[in-house]
Image (cartoon, rainbow, N blue to C red; front, side, top):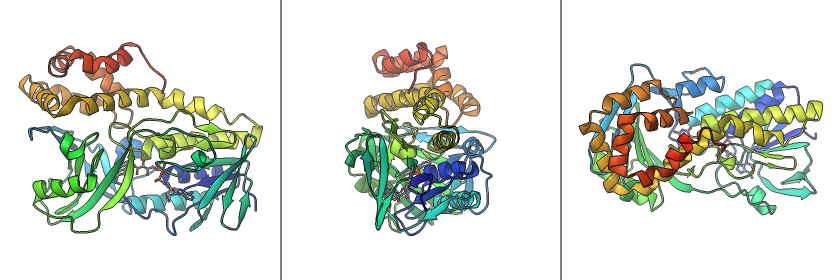
Length: 400
Ligand SMILES: Cc1cc2nc3c(=O)[nH]c(=O)nc-3n(C[C@H](O)[C@H](O)[C@H](O)COP(=O)(O)OP(=O)(O)OC[C@H]3O[C@@H](n4cnc5c(N)ncnc54)[C@H](O)[C@@H]3O)c2cc1C
């Protein structure tokens, strides 16, 4: 059968896009190179409460492992600041089960899942791409490319999507460790996790998921971190994956191909979380593909639609990531100390309570327009370091 839409990759973005297309009554096939959905799993599994709702999903016991109320942020000096909400702000999710749930929903809507089938190439003829798979060539009307971080197919076809800021990330599951349930830990430091941070996420009684991403030798850094923090070596196999921190790619529509999810860099550059924003953009791609098939509307609309809705979020988060990357250990430690000494913890706490875990532009803007917070940041970080963020905030809503 020639599907109207072919999706490359059965991660969250591909599955959410496929469900949307199938619900609109069009035929859609999802090609996944692995033999099972959700495997191998390398994700830390934090998904905001609000984000799950935005994706139209209920929290279900079969994939929720816990709730997160707040966290402790550790500066390179070891000093920390604690922020805690009275209501759960995020879920800890078992990503394999979560992805399987998305696959079931897509299949229930009518999408066909084809496992163990790698898409080997996109063959462009003019503006139309066909899919080369083992045993044949497929000519769908629309291709949704959801192949994840460091997507290769478009590059091989001569279109460099230009993904930047990919870091190597590592995750280890620990048991027999002491962690406070409901509170995550984020550890910053250039030698620990340059360009990102290390995390500890409680997953159950005495259990935690611990990982980091970094510009350097992340695996060695993680082993060092586990020794320092818990006095342990990784007990089980450490999972590796790539974390996108460079923001969206320049272009996400190539003829009949729409790029979505990590493949499009639709990931929060601050935290590397891509399930929610990537999933929301994938939903838009599913709608645009369906409207193209139904009414002949232009596929190029996808580019403007997702950028208008989320572009300013990505821009501000990317500027914050740039600021963090350029600070260095000393200034970062100084800033955290200044926040505590100048009694700004309560203000930060208030921002956490009001702020949105996924759409972070609002909270970034509020922090930079709060006179006391801004003065402390300028004193401890320097106005030059804040330059890009300040100009974005003062310049209104930039596009991503
Ligand atoms: C260490 C780590 C921790 C993370 N923690 C979080 C977190 O806590 N919260 C969060 O929101 N995000 C997190 N992320 C990011 C999150 O995993 C991604 O944003 C999300 O998985 C992106 O979904 P996707 O569908 O775009 O891509 P993926 O989930 O990567 O799925 C892509 C799929 O495409 C398949 N594929 C690739 N090429 C082909 C091909 N040619 N043919 C067929 N199939 C193909 C792959 O096998 C894969 O199944 C983390 C990432 C890492 C590495």
